Length: 463
Image 1 (cartoon, rainbow, N blue to C red):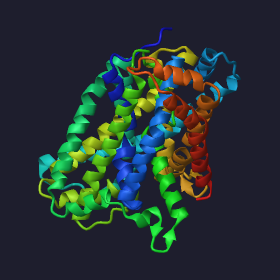
Image 2: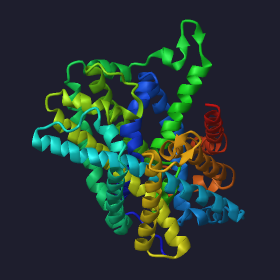
Image 3: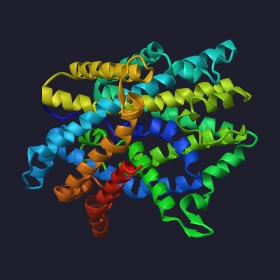
Image 4: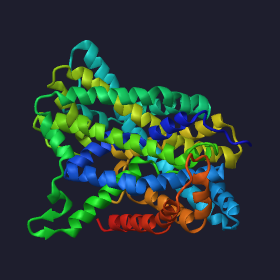
């Protein structure tokens, strides 16, 4: 079957940026900045994103474009183009890891995106009724209800499925053309509004001015352990934010034609992803500082602390609604990309239509989400160790299985097919790649990236 391609380079950039720009940027990034020293974390994250994230993203897009097929068959196809024969285990292990992450991450992700949709509806009711329905207990009330969370989660799954059934061009690409510019406009508007809030300068200072002690530089010398922990946290966030752990980047790359300049497109994707993370920090942290709250609130920062802040602000109801619409749009575009990786694999390997693949994955997602919520709300005594399934699976995928997939794919790209990866990057490029770039790319895929990924994986085992 002939491989479908993106309608335009801009459509690909917006769709891939939409995949990367999700809860990791707007929900996760601000509280990580708040918990890890502010400006030092931002600096380290920026260096990780452009120093390694860019090259890994570029490599995986080239890997997908060279394969022009699903992720299971992609390993063998690209190896054959490189005049090599590899074991089918490469594809089956890579595909199994990718599909496992799709199923588990989407199950956890739907719970959180369901929260954002519930808050959008509540925020809209607050705005039009003039009554503040969101208070400090709203989040605990929502997260203790199995039925409400399942309802909002299923609604998010239905919306996502309706888009994906329409396909890559008419569904994902067309919606990205609408949602991504809308997201950027919302971000800029909210950041400007918060900028003029009295006391916001303290949050901006915290975000942009490094506290060198948080990076390990103290009056007593340099603390290697503090620096290493900050570096690994920032690198983990860069991998999480750029959606590299579920085969999404590979699949989106497989829809590319040889005429697309990959280096240029990848720069735009990493740039937009980093821009949104910084803008989210410029919205959340100044607002929190202006009202005397701590920035190190953790995951509840967006759902507990911020509504409290908005309720005390002039025009806070408008801002609160805008913020949760922003969060929902970002999460929706990411969930679409997570689904697409599984849909593509099911269509190719099971020989079924897109509609059947989407509905099958949606059904599995509803079942898994229901099981996670039953554990989370204590409806069923389902635990992994001492954690409920929501917390355990979030940790399992975020710290282990996604990293394993990235490490596995990177080892293959670096040690088996690096020549074809670099050759594919040159296709469609406006300028010829320099010898330095080719050598650095190969060295990164073979040594730098695997070493850092391995350290990241091992370090989580000892935390």
